[in-house]
Length: 317
Image (cartoon, rainbow, N blue to C red; front, side, top):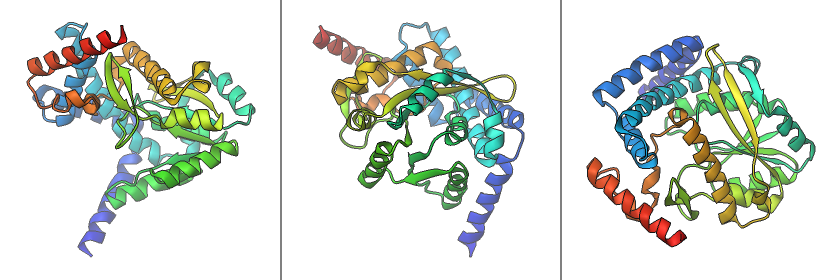
């Protein structure tokens, strides 16, 4: 009974938070992020700082700190916005998409009837896009249950409103995604986390990292069209969505080449808008030589990264 009451409280608390105005969620996130940055209260902030130092060594310390501060605020803001999006109706979420860049690219790809693989990096508030796409195409999405059952119920309810079919993040789920694509359906893949097993080594900010090749394999085996998506918040309580075609080579090369193309697009996006990327994930330990890079002093960590980067450059030559 205690557990049930606890779960019920969590569920209703999430529902309450999700119903607050979007500007309130953004303001609260900004306040908490400011405290987190100033007092270094979170390991998330520490990881973000280390990642930015590794990925963008050409920037001065002042420039890096500016990006770190903005990135922590934007990432926390996105988390608050996720709850707001999950608690809103599809109609409301679709209305929050104020501008769509490249919309015709999507409609042309959909009209081919070959299925769509939507490549979405951990950038901005990607959850804001789901309702819009679900209004145009049948979605099959791989979903890993949240450990907290109340939070999991809350998110699953939101997904059911979006008319998305949820499948597990295992081989059975991959098979379901494959079948959906062959029927002309659509899936969404967030490819910029390290795979638990397997994957392929591709350069990411000049460092070879174990990377998921699922997206490239799905695209090449099913001949589905691939699109690159991201959403950026605007100043009018909404979002601007960007849809981009992916290099045609992704349909013809190997899964390694396809994975490299995807990560190159992600890197280019990050270099353009580094403050909007979610930097908290410890991505760079996906290189065996950098497994301890988040536990070393800044000086030792960056020295080690420079060595790995130099070795990768030498091999490339």
